[in-house]
Image 1: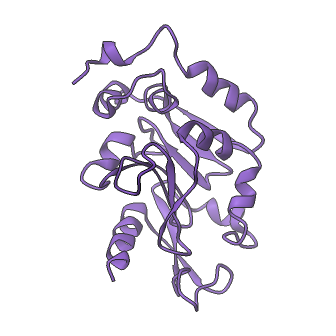
Image 2: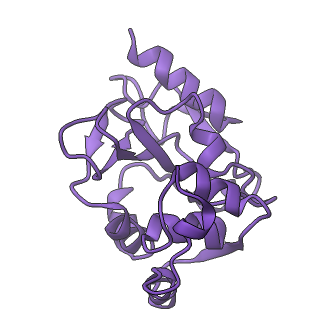
Length: 211
């Protein structure tokens, strides 16, 4: 197991690349400062700050993107208490959960449990309840998340007035829909919405996917 000094890369850090992405962002975002847990989180992940994942884990508390619609996990922050290490503990099997959204969708890096394309990003979609290949890596995922392409991706999963509804939603919460969006009766506009904890939504997804 590598120590922290071996994981913090001072020669070719990815921090300048992440800063460039943020400077070029075309959507609203909030960069959260890193927490006191950053060293522990990076050590648990065993990735270096030469990678964008290591940079987000070590140098940030996470990102709240597009008015908080998308939450990219880092080392944790009062506005985004979950961190990359603890959130994955006993929860991710063959993947690394790195982000989630307000409609109960989860983003993960494939570690071999989702397919042969190890290192690629997947999305656990609330309207299909299936892991969907995104055919991009984590760096491209960050670039995409900070661009106006996010609106295209979520077309059909947003409803009139969603921005105002997010004001009452915490970053450890998401909306649960009934009838479920993945059912024939489910509809983003017609299904009822209830605020629940993200962990509850994740566990519900796990249970429902076994049916």
